[in-house]
Image 1 (cartoon, rainbow, N blue to C red):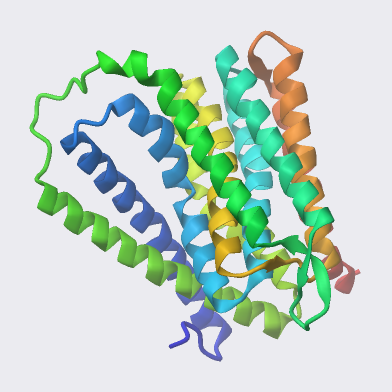
Image 2: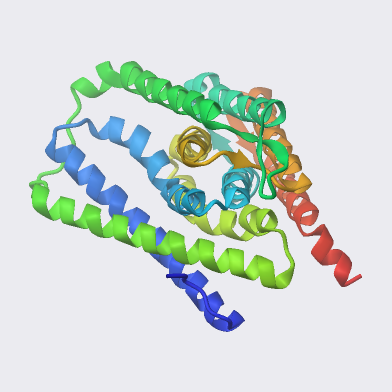
Length: 337
């Protein structure tokens, strides 16, 4: 069953409904998983370090996994690369612009941000050094199963590092909640409901995007790297702005960095196990390089001052996002010039 029809208006409504299911389903899934973790006496801090970043990446993961099963590899690459570029340039840029000065802990830079840049570099090396079978049977740049296994192993290593480095801090912490945790049965039911919403939403999103790209003559890579990437990055936007306005700056920027890391390790790693991720257009290869460029800018800005990002740097990030959009929509823009 395909979640699209021959009407652009109805497909737009299906797209919006699918995006809503993705976002609400991811919220439900994360909250339920956190409740189960509390029932099993897992530290709240460890939950936050892992579930917040992974949870805000669930919309990207669900839509990309379905696309992998459907063989839409351009959608996967565009979604992941576009989400990472959007996270850094648009969402972090907006957060820095709103707060003026966004401070962060030294460890966030020395461990997580450097690892994020390393993941971007590894992804670029994999893409440019590996060829897989493309859409028409022609060899193209991409990520094969062995690269996917390597990415997953790197992600597991990162999680183990997080647990190990925070085990002593979390050992003596309590949740501080007086109310009893929900029953396991209730939490598991909500977890299952969230998973169903994720699956249905991802199918509706991918089906309508592929249909629209074919009808409008726009590359699937472009749509997934811009429209879909922005939509699935809404959870990161919400968490980042909440962290900014509540003066929880480490959460604001840490959510961005952690989500970018898990987008690479988890999403590309798992999807590459399902099908080789071939990049069937030149714009896809350029977008991978542009993601690396956004990571380099972030590292440079984080290393310039004393553990803080400033408003002018937020303006630069937003200008970079504008350039990212202009490049991807250059063919569409040329039609009206």
